[in-house]
Image (tube, rainbow, N blue to C red; front, top):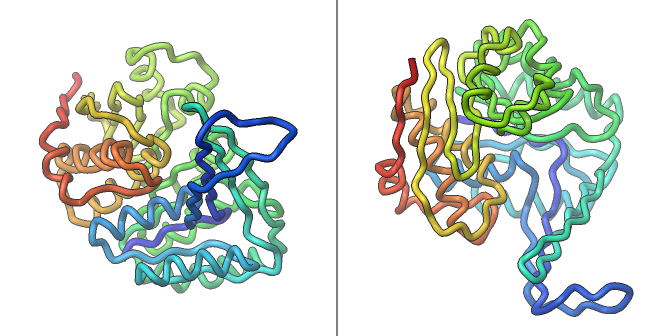
Length: 311
């Protein structure tokens, strides 16, 4: 089983306007979608689509929390979420004239009791997990070292963790004694992490030699349409992805995490794993829905990805 962690989930609402977004007046919209959102739940959906045994956990509260529970229950995904007194947030995207305007709520404040309860339940739930994914930001009320506590718990049970976060949270995790098994910064996030400008792939490769990444087995640096640079132990790989018609790239990074988690669970070798993981990002970009891939296109996409070893 793969366990996904989303500590600050949301109900993602998408409004597609037929024309311009009019300010200071009424905008009427018929094209509306509402889905269980948050980076970790995108990972969860893709893992489910790939046929993996997956469970999801985090914090949920209020009617929006109930909505998310119903959605994952419909997909027969195991629900390990912890109930909280606060209300799960909305995240709204208004799509207009080829643009996307977002309104993102910060979400509920988690109490000390709720934070402790989550860790207690997690210590039991993670015993069933072969791999754990942690995605996104922390809700209010949670200390910046909270992910470190999860990493330490996972290390005690020898359960590898795939961590997809950025900034201070990622820096804290990399300084922790118990390291994530895989991280997935994009080029901009990597530059922010090491405090340097990284204008091209050569600079990215040099950045991967930083002592900050010592003892992190897998580092996947996504480069958008330029593919990725991947480091496993001391081996570097350059990844070229196929050119496809991009319909919705949102959630592609989450889909990559799902691909790597599924590939690791299946015991794929390095190059096969890299192809499989990056293929999910490509396939997500080809779909209109966020955090969705077409399983029938997986083999085709994997075959289109080129992985080269770098000296």
